[in-house]
Image 1 (cartoon, rainbow, N blue to C red):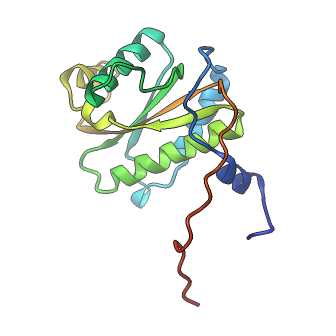
Image 2 (image 1 turned 180 degrees about the vertical axis):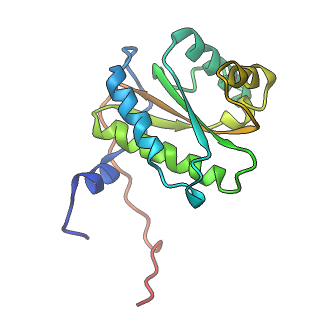
Length: 177
């Protein structure tokens, strides 16, 4: 066990996926800070070949929730009531796009936790943004080219206690010294 613990390492150990959110929208400054943290994620060859669509409009958020639920084959809100959805997409022709977008979402989830907000990664952005309706949204936003949905970072105020961490599985680290 490492006895040295700074705030970043602490946030990494304490962050949990949240599955119950209050309806109140987080402060815009907090959401901007979360999105900015995503912009500083590592990217293959420094290409920064990802985009983030920050959705705080309730009507658009609900439309996306319905589309996600349809892909999943369920009738409930896959975003667990989170009022802000940060969708990350990567350029289709970028061979590190999936990894780069994953790092963006990881940074955003850590940033949300550090600001006292809850978050969760929700999948199925690839399927959504392969559909004409969502490709049109990209075009309407002025996003040109071919993009692949990587995931959604659903963000909001937690309406629950912070879940406890499951014990870490043994046998997952091998040292060669």
